Length: 217
Image 1 (spheres, one colour):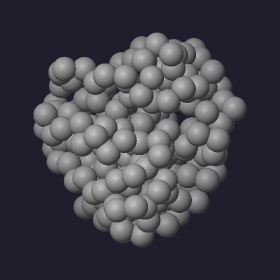
Image 2 (tube, helix red, strand yellow):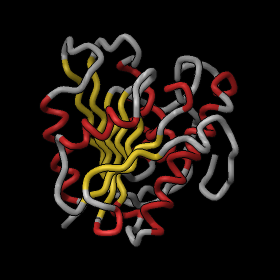
Image 3 (tube, helix red, strand yellow):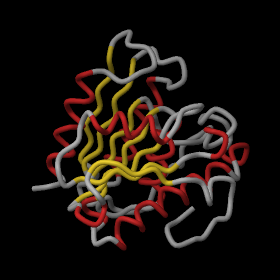
Image 4 (tube, helix red, strand yellow):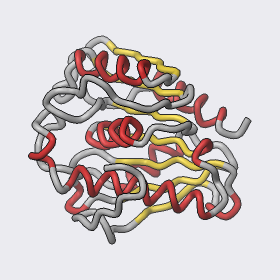
């Protein structure tokens, strides 16, 4: 799914939850994608921990709290139409920020778990300069990754944080995702945390907080 291609899927027409600085007054925005079984409101609460004045939050809600039905490591077609519909939801949120006067260069994608996978996929499929990507316990979607992801991310900062023993996200896929983003000219930071499990830790929040601050420079 590329930007500009309209998808009418299960996640279109769902609520877009907002937080942080009012969009009309904001200089930058975070687009926040939640994990399987979770909520947009939960991502707003996570973002509150890294907020800076001047940054708006836009959090799409997945239908039935799930972006796509199967593992992100399944063949892509087995996760349609949810995957494409979720990518459209991210694109729509970015467009909402753009309409409010916030350029994409000041829009950062933040996702956890299934939402981290979806945000990673959006970046790879719609390459340009963004304010950043923080994929927390996530990676690119598909049974096999493409040999080549065309396009230039123009030094977009990318943070990949994950446990080395995450039950859902294999360490190898995190490495492979980092390699893809580096090949697309992103500025990648990858951190694997020993024995962490499936969650977000203080080191990740501290790093993401710095990325959010950089949006306002």
